[in-house]
Length: 277
Length: 277
Image 1: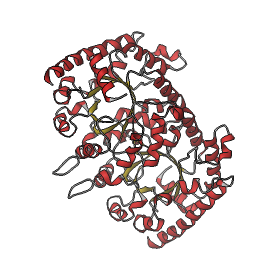
Image 2: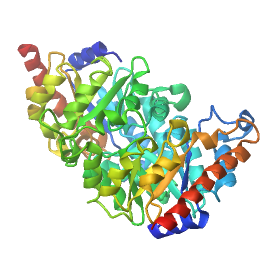
Image 3: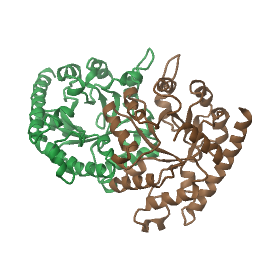
Image 4: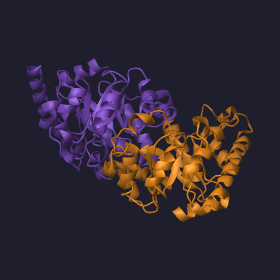
């Protein structure tokens, strides 16, 4: 999906919601356990109930790997079920030496090899340029670089630095040289709303993938205050608050209600965005 | 495997060789493609041919994920074939918010959940404390933190810093607070031989996992000069130079020859180590 197609989807749906498919088999409604692949069944129903309210889906690989081969199969089948008009992100936070990152790229960007062909992958920047380049070698794909994450541990190294900059700023500045904002996004946690002002100085047009809404404590208003651009420029992720809105048979309906609630707030923000720019 | 058991294995086998099972289906001898699982068959024969010459095996998850469900199955079956008296490392370079890192820990440390129960995992430190702690919550397991990696991109961020320290040093100092050297190792690339002197000042007793020997240009003598401790303190990894020593039917034999060559050099280093301490 190109940047323009993504922007079109956002203004069409009046939504910049990304739904994180962090599906934990121990948290899904028990009646689903009777299905051959309970995780897949859960995901399908969540997707059916929300695909018109969000613009992106983001399965996190950890939630699938923890179940071994079965889990990996659920991930591949979930990928296949994702609508093509939604932006499909694999949240994998990979990164290794160039040769090896090339294998990770095949894992998520080469359907013939792995059965999956996501639009984008999240990557960890610690190993530098050659650990990221192989993902960008795939035409029309996106790399989403961890910059300032939503968790408490983000304070340990991401704010390490000197008089000129923090590590997360250095990461953004360096990553800006790897590709344009047509292929590169940054992860910035919803819990760092004030930081969006500074981040927009060094990444004025980049889309930012923003986790941490809801359970982790971030608020949409705060994110949008400095994060929103004329093209929207944000994909805001919610996972647990949508997936586990109910643990009963009505879980998909309740998930839709929560997604709708967020989408309605987003529509207001996008209206402001239209007025502002 | 405990630290003492690892040290005992090293001095018993006169080897601190770790063999990286970075098995690329496109690089293995073509006759193996007739097998149901060519990658597994290759790995089994490599393990059979080398298990008395090395003390550790380290499959890199990328080389398995790139083949989707099939590849993940090869990884699980390879894990099952690894001898228990060898230190079993999964080179996965994972790291995510606490909740999610817990899922990755289950993926590699919980056999009932995933079919795998490695002794150790490599992790990326960018997301900080809560991204690593879930791996350390598993008793008797090891976490191997990326510090100074062997690739060219290591220069992009790992040497970012201030008058007090570089990022990789800050990572080591912080990680030292997470666990003792009974459960924590660091990745230091063979290509940074001179840095071992400084690293030994802040991690005097920790085992260091050292990739980059052979194809990547590192030399054993240089690594040992400052890296070796009285307990050895090193696991030096070789992958491609062993795995692909031959592409013919004699590949396992040639792999053994290369592993033997390295082990013989290591025996000399360990002798020096006995004399020095």
